[in-house]
Amino acid sequence: MEQQDKRLAVLIDSENISIRYIKFILDEISNYGVATYKRAYGDWTNPSTSGWKEVVLKNSITPVQQYSYTQGKNSTDSAMIIDAMDILYSGKVDGFCIVSSDSDFTRLAARLREAGMLVIGMGEKKTVEAFRASCSLFKYLEVLAAEETQGGDVSREDIEETILKIITDNDANDKDTTVGELGNKISNRHADFDVRNYGYSKLSKFLESFKSLHLTQSGKTIYVDLAESDVTRDQIERIIQDIVSAAPKKSMSLPELKQKIEKKVPNFNIRNYKYSKFSQFINDMDGMTVSNNNVKYQP
Image 1 (cartoon, rainbow, N blue to C red):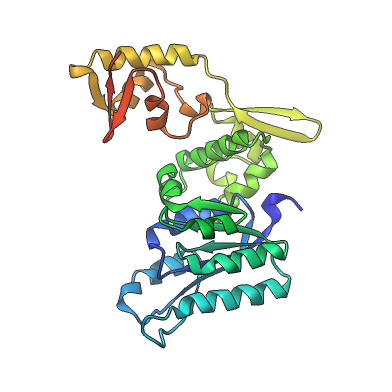
Image 2 (cartoon, rainbow, N blue to C red):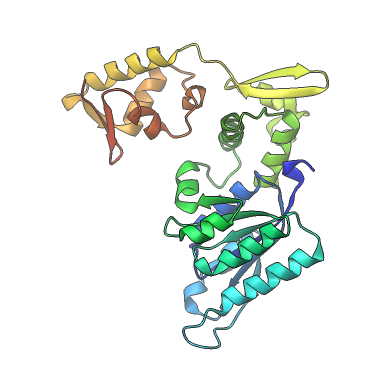
């Protein structure tokens, strides 16, 4: 079974996770398969959960009511564990995504893995090592949120950013990217995606319209990669050093620096240099220091 065809159950501990992470969670899980179950657990009679109503409706998540019967006891954890085992025995999924920073799910994750399930854990950096180690994979929510730059509307720019991230992630795992895989993963992230909305009848033609992409065909398979940059890493470093050196106190904000680079190099894309974050790209250059969204050059 192809990775993108895996059926996954996404179980979210709403009492332990902020609603601001939901989009990043669902975007990330689409890289591993299709979320056939999406459930969020909590006591929805509690005023502190009022913000979840819009989120669960917008993302087609099933809210599971769990009353706090006894003070100090977490009934939500028990409900998630029972449901997870019911879903496991149903035989309808290939893996689970457990979203919580709570160590109480350590044994559950281990049990699911014993049953041959893929177990993806997601939580904040405060998550204890025992739970992280019990999962097949563990994703820090703060990192997912920092990497994502997409907005809510599906513009060409949003779609391009999604495509570039998929290709970069595949490159990091020495994996080729095909047009078919891109189509599946884009649709998983944007349910209403349709190339006809952008004036194209075929996905491959739509992809060819992006200057940042390069398509090659081998037999019946079309592969997609990042377009080669005309500017080498050494050349772009010298350009950046010159820009920052000319600034007062050899310092400027990252957005201003990016804007100046793009004026000199119109097709500039940090993904050509195997980076996904502009700040990290700059910080790794000799003499460059990034702090509080500002860069300083000290040769």
